[in-house]
Image 1: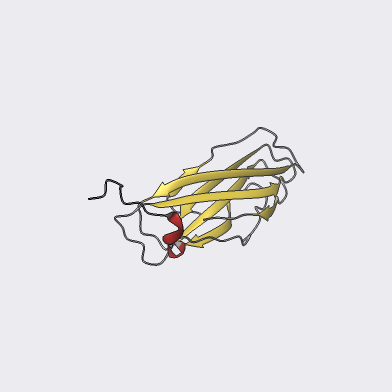
Image 2: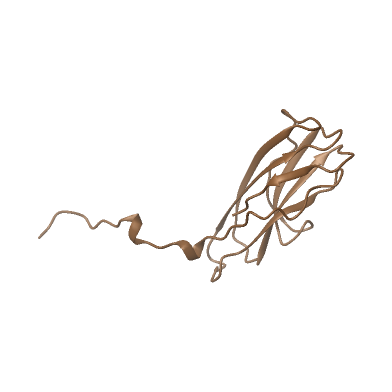
Length: 135
């Protein structure tokens, strides 16, 4: 009888169907409005007994008069339940500054779509999102 434990190698497990992601920038915030900048659909076959891990990241140029930024991951749309919230981030935020920020959370809901939103506090002109992967 062998005393070696059974081992599994990660390269033999295909989890590709369990991941969904998007790198498409949907829009950039106009003034101080909370705006959907990226969205992703839940992986097919997702069950309510499972949790889904969500990770959003964005690179953007802060619009005129911007003093803080806030990234959120929400269910469905801009009015949906907040899953993750960066809070108001002020460090290094100034008009025309190029900023990169991330936010992450987990959800046990069974919604079909998650959105990544960006809001620029006191923005009086549009900010420009240059990259926004959401997964």
